[in-house]
Length: 258
Image 1 (cartoon, helix red, strand yellow):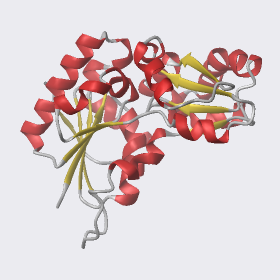
Image 2: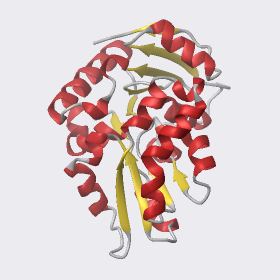
Image 3: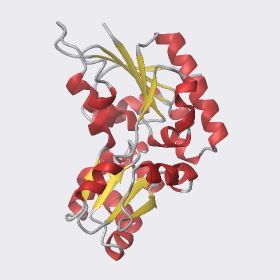
Image 4: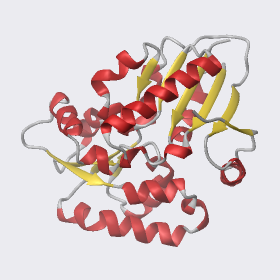
């Protein structure tokens, strides 16, 4: 049975795991490194150390066949170094090429963490995607929205969430006629119901939807009818389990830290 480990700094991995479970039948290990949340506030050297230490821990503990870094932030900031960290490692990238294909207003947005939005890495990524000259890519810091997910407020205080989303996005979306936005943090898909209800004319693209491309060599027919899911956190086990239960996930949660 093949084994895949998925990790990021908290809830974000769940949006990726949700897609993996549709296509992969095997052992799936989810590590929420909440002790190091948020990745988006770390310097690149600090983040690289965290990722290296995490990979070493996961390989030592689980001997996985493949590791998915389910966070756009380290994927982009450490892009050129990913394969040097581990040959088993893959990251999650913003679906910018998809956004370019479907935008009609020629104004699209990348919603991400502060460190990504302010980095040279995102600029280089945009250039590599061959965005047409007549198209504008608006980079928007959505760190406050990431916090809505990690704190669990998206489950417990929906009105507050709507207000924060409007405060962060409403003016920039309307002023620039943005019609497509990439959810370039894996936390953000959990806010998609709010986003779609507030911005009815904007298409939101989830990077986890492209996970089948990453896992094409690991998807195989076998006798298993479902995944085996094991969950670990480096944070508060009881609080994390409580939030997972509110999302309909009742699996056991164990503590794991570097």
